Image (cartoon, rainbow, N blue to C red):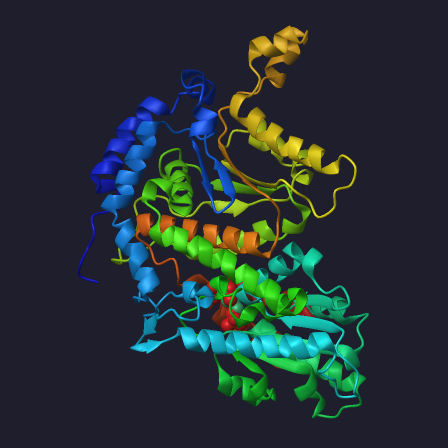
Length: 544
Ligand code: G6Q
């Protein structure tokens, strides 16, 4: 690329932020709150029913002003427009990035290579709906004439994490007559455990693979086919009644033996980790039904429209993206914790790990230069309150500064006794404790022995966001996922990296292929790896 942009660190607003950081780095949240009694009401945003309290962040009005300035200097508004327009912003793969088209309204026009992709999106949705109706009504029969009772999604990475997360998140809205399982790992134990209590005659496999070449998925799909045929007496025609595919690769799907009439298409302008609302979400639609799936798409779309149209200062993904980069690029923060106080979001942190780190775990700018600043932090987390009894110790009193996103909901699907009030009390108390801590004087006034005081002091000044919504349902889930997708976009836009390629994943796909041959070869091959790799291969061959 010829048009080299100035490095992020050379931007005027970035330099001003560096100077400003020296003033604010030692300011305590206690002081920021004391100076502005309305801070907790003022530094909030209420967008589409998602309330963000960002007051417990180490930011002042000046910080925010400069961050928005930086966003403008980095052309964030025009980059947002370019994505929605379908420009080929995934430059290393020369692709448009149009997951937003997956949730567009039927009358929209979004052009890729001169053709409107919206009708294709809705044609696939209609085809998915048709399949779901037939399966859920019992009309679709397996090879022996029995209706389908179990659905197994086989896929990995972007073809697994979204479906698993959405199934778990929306389980309460799912058809409980159907059993859902997800197989991703090449480790045979994953497949064996997933099917051990299933009846092949009632099982439908969804082979989800954008490329249909991923070793793990194709191996698991072959094993599934063997398991099915062994269970049903070995008749090849059975495959057509028990396998459907989600892919961009019709040739490979057909070679595998799946009728392409039962193939659900998506497109190369949908990245794997951005694909859970494409046909990759077929298991989600089977679980919650076409109406539930449409509600989720509506949630995505509402957040897309907010991101596309809201002014930067009132734009939820922009604000959260900028605050996260403030910590990464100025406070040198290396990890961010995602802490859902909602059991049904137990796989949400795992989903976000891929979305954030595969997107922005990059060191090369769009201009081909090495970055001279940090890019994606590590995202991780566990549902509350479990985490409190394990790693929160480090967040409260450890040496690392770990900004947290607390996610909570006013209503629960299971209002049992006092459970929900206690759950929410914990979420709110944690952010309070992290921000304000417990001073030496406060600990002393509890009557704590002098020698114990330093151990019981909490410095506080540990930042967090709290996101509060009414309830976790399909529409809210769509909004939340789109929120984080766009936070990732904002980060990538400022870091000037390609958030939509994944060359690190591709490398892994190639490397293992070679070693498999060496592990399985009957001959003693002359191994040409480093001495460590050679020794591991030899040891495994000897012992297996
Ligand atoms: C996602 C990545 C990666 C991908 C898997 C599965 O953005 O590209 O996680 O989803 O490697 O790939 P297939 O869907 O092609 O099997």
